[in-house]
Length: 455
Image (cartoon, rainbow, N blue to C red):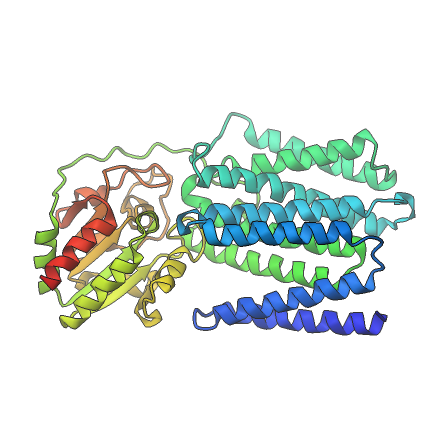
């Protein structure tokens, strides 16, 4: 294929990426945006394979088939509750792929590479290594294979600083003498992987949505660097788009968590604090009594969280919402930006249940009128409705904007137990005067309320 046709194919791919990314901004067009971006990537891959003089397609074909099988099976088998972990693994595979591309660019004649190319190779290996190991730690925290709380120790920042200094020294030495078999290269590779681990372990569970979006950005930046390393324009464009989009999303998540982007980048948050122990009297309620209160309500706000995903309760929640509307009640869904364990987690769940998008209300819009809400139904949310974020300066989540459900006239909290949220912080909401605890599986509890409405 001629260079002109290759360039034309890359332009078409880049345009599809940009249009697809734009359409991902709305639930109404998100599916089409995914399709356009996928078509763009297919065109980019085909054009690259036809134009780069591939020596042997056997390995490429085998890898493509294997990847398609793994992706297809994962798409069918992975539950929505495990989607954050899957996203973390996707970020990690993007990072290790960029690392491998940068590494491969050193062969067969590393000395023939310019200083600029060698720098981009180092960056692709460095950022790719950080993304890979950091994503594995994020996966471990999200899946609770390891503790989800912050892991800190004395002198941690000093250790991280020494790792950074070591990376800079090794990077300079490698660019001056680009030998991929030298101890300098292997040290650089090891330090990159170690820095990814050290950057994520001091971050607590409540901040995981920020970490996910940041690692997504890292994977894009690593791909961009790899594109420069192998002089592939479409890889540079795609990596830049992912990196920029990830940074924008990270900034949005930081504002939602009341964190600064600088603190995230330098692992400045996640320090362990001892929150005030919460004690009080719990007021349980049964489904029959919950039905009577909901039946008399003129407006109800549902506040979903990760517990709704675990219980797979989104469909019965939508059905209850329909019954309430038929009863003359105004129904809304208050969505915190970091509800769940990844950005947009609740939006995806509710879209899966065909909840009308105009019923979804952002935190900043619901809080000014929360005092006029008759019933706020909290379904598996903990940290995003925890008043300690407003009131307890010792709390690890202090300063994080929350949905002020405790100011509603009545609050129903659907939980299996009194266990704390993913951050491990006790929630004084559970003991509030206007709070009623509806214990049990959220799906079963709501189904019983629905049966009362239909009965």
